[in-house]
Image: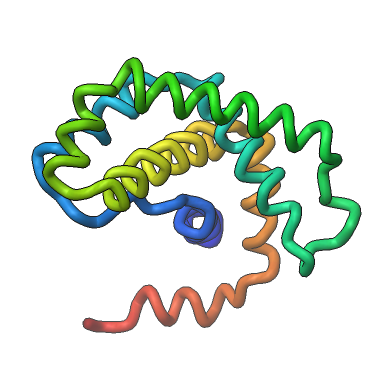
Length: 151
């Protein structure tokens, strides 16, 4: 039970939610992004997110990535976003903007990219082995009580 709880918690913590709004334009864009990306695109997205987050001043210097790697990640992510928004999913992007506006459309596109990237990376056995280690620090008795509590 601890292992399952830990894995579910990690998925929730690292997944970037796509825009909550639902309509046919947004749904079509979300589907296009999912169908137009692959594991390599997920790695590009995750690398870009990791490098961007590594810039946060609260994180130790040891996790920061150099400017050169940051520029490379930005170039790769820019190419991916250009491909999706302007080529592969251009019709869906235009329809979503017309139906929901540009902010919701871009939140949906980026959120879906983030969800796909994290979903792909979380299935890696090395990543899951690292995440499952959190279970050693959870209070198993309190978790069991919480799960068994009547509704």
